[in-house]
Image 1: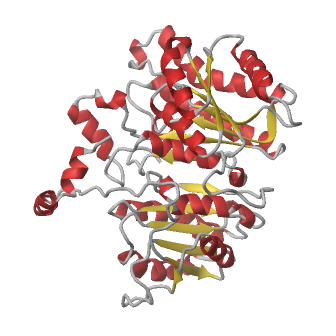
Image 2: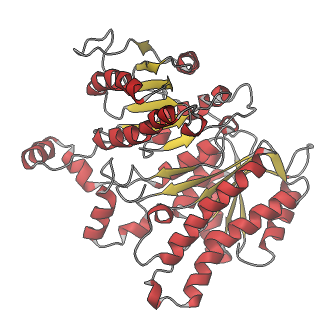
Length: 456
């Protein structure tokens, strides 16, 4: 989907005009292409204090064929060209005074960062700090990374990973994701890892090979994009949607070589029907029937709260929240259906974090999804499984294309990347959380919003 203003601002004439008028110039985002490199250039690694993750980071970069150059000095000197990634290991922070080292490393390096560059900060969680001063220093990185994300231009992003002691082995998959083009529209995010037992190796091109993935709301839009990315990454997709969308659903399933399953997820017997379908079609081999479940189906019935009838409220709650609860519980309860190392990904929304006028029902349901994920995370961890949420911001779809021009432009520009995201951006994040190597990410909510200026 074309972004007319971004394309104009990056044309020869448009670049001149936007500079003269002081208008923003959104960067062309670097998105994932199968077979492409992890980074289109070198990486720089620095430390604030006695960091413990440098060797782990270096090993991930080496395996990906990325060259590590020496840090940029204050005068701009370096042994390489402009880096494509800047990585700060801040696991050695003890006091706020140690943050000076973070500034001294980051400031000159960010001046040389390439377009669509990646800035990643690594630190210990504030909750594990030994003193208030140490907790303050670690928490300071949250404000630092979000501010960096707002300062970067030309499609570059900044994100923070909290890596507690013992979770070093879980770092590789999140690090690769945030360095890659898969995270093009993920900016200013903070993710806390946990220790996990992970597979020894994973096919970078087909990380979901041999997996069975259920995707609800798969007939169109973001759901169809999720199904296609899952299939591209090797999964067999069971595409689920209501019978009224049967033709579109069949087209998506046929395109990706998956299975179409017509189901109203709000029906009383929907969870059991899904369980039975999975047992009939995907049981065998001593394994569970399904490895990945993506709760994507959702509806809106907008109205100011004072004018909202019970039908609008109840229908949104039923589809967006209650169905996710009921289906997930049924899968947990059904013997031999959900694999022990399964991945559940629930689609929330920026509205569930920031709220939105006229969407009290929708925002409440999407906030409820986040609460559900947090509460279920320990239960899933006991099974070596994970449950996470993805919260999209302004994503350009057929629905947003029908908005008035002014509303659409405001919605797409109010973020650090100054543009709307694409359905594939949401799909890439969900596919990453679905990978076996992402077992150290559990109970987290990742916003895919270009660091929207609305909400946290």
